[in-house]
Length: 482
Image 1 (cartoon, helix red, strand yellow):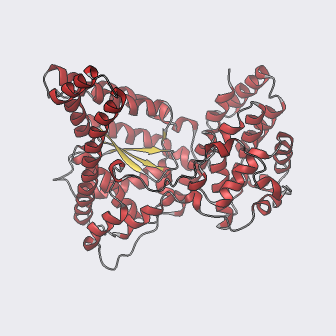
Image 2 (cartoon, rainbow, N blue to C red):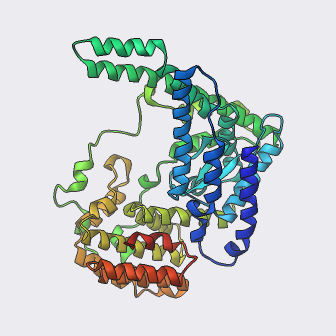
Image 3 (cartoon, rainbow, N blue to C red):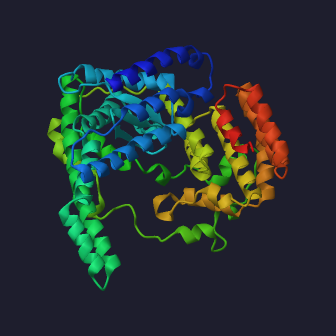
């Protein structure tokens, strides 16, 4: 009942924001951030989600602790704006969810509460409590409605099978068990290698838990296929193979040499800057150990090839897949890119922009985002925080040109970065952008000029928010308020 009430409340507020979302080319509005949009739902979740009484006093106390941690986790994520509401994306995914749930009423008692996560990772996940989250990275990655429907059905399966709740129960039962207490007592009374013994004790539980989780994933795959068949939606085991490439975005090499991308903005960058000249900060991050595979005991999901083989015979013949609408893909990509910028993942943001250039994308918004990245580098340099903003990735997880780009960002002088930023400000692409976009450019230009004057920057930020009350830029501008 609580989940239904929450869903109804969100649907009502969705109607109120539909007209405004359709009346502007903004990717979203400030009020669409989860701390604002879902403010009432946060309070409802806190009050309504209480752990059921299942155990004796000690185990119940632990269970309520872990259950409460999950409630607090999702409430904190909402408060920290890890989610947002986007009417077009929300409506599109909700229609797919309804298609699954209405055709499986005997198996699915409640329609899930849908949240949109701004994260760029290719993922959807269940939070428990009837809440399912979909990352922008997944919408960017998925090719068809049917592929997305399978992933959603998989997450609904976790909900129906109570996997998040069962994990809390298992953990509480183990921590309060006589076996665990005896082992802990034996370690406490031993004279040698206490740390090693403790580590092994926790590993034994982790191994059991992850094995159980891998089994859960296989069961969720099977139930998801049942959901799809009942909804007359096709299934293709090849989607599971595609998931193997989900984390390869930054391994995809660019089609051109890096200096050529910047020459399009009348920026001449020496090729030498893309080659490491010294043992810098980024080198310290590299261990050059292959991290693309994990020990079997640490995996929670079965290998995609295993999942593919297990479900291959369930593949629907002669599938005609429906492409995800272009406007949904574009919107998800832009939200994801903005979030990378706001979270100071500047190299990742810039690299994804350059990949768009390789795909022939002429949208001036991506040029705008590249200038924002340059601003981030200039400002963080002046604050002596450039390394954090570059967000160095291990060399074994990225392409050669990604490595070259982050090397250039590390080595180029602050003065040159300022010159690049100023040059991009003269670009013709600004003619295609909105007044809000241009106002934001003026704001960050002033921030660079007044970097050492926090009071003046605070005044600029307050002035911007008063003049542009609805734009999503306010979230970023708020970082500069004291």
